Length: 291
Image 1 (tube, rainbow, N blue to C red):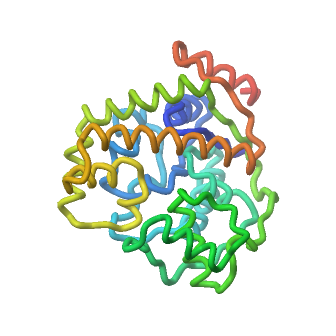
Image 2 (image 1 turned 30 degrees about the vertical axis):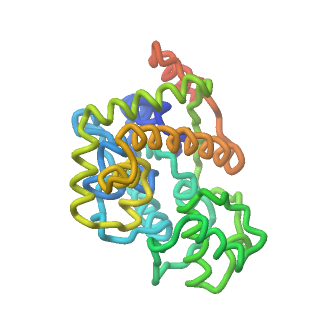
């Protein structure tokens, strides 16, 4: 059986993945589209070596920020890891917040290799949305979701097909159970705000400044929340306080979109997190899993 841990940013997915892996002889597989890249650590709250507790972790830090990595690539890589872990009699634990990557790995989804990928860095998000509407008036992609808009445009350019017409399926290819972590919105938003403050203390400005100085502006760098906002500060366009507040705001909005996506796309079993005693949450999940 495969265990999938989903939920919004900042809710404790990483912590639960370690606890379940220790109890269930598991290995963790990353299901976050940005954590496959090396050097992007603090802004992504990527798990530290000291936190892994000797649990094998896969598909973290496998690509350079100058390389392109698509859902097509992830589907292939993740399925190989799933099969390897299952063949050893161990439990794969897929953890992350990128719903499309999870569906690509576990469901009967067909993806074409994106041979030509355009970042569209010279266009604003609104301009890209207008481009998408001109070719697909029925799109249901949010006008502020730049990542999905770019993907839809590239899908059309590579296949001459509309992403909204792409055949979707609810057919699972693996025996998988979906565990979702949740909490009250005000608690989550407070945790997100405090986590951003902690990232600043841990050195996010230095991490972002290094990237800023490299002049690398690939999808890997410009997609995550945390870098592009600080780039605006380094460029003198906004104050540091404005940049930090923007990171918090966009992180909260992203969490809201994650909830909506997982609720609409997967049969998730939701658990309210006890942040005062996470052991209670772990035991509740294990009881549900009959472990």
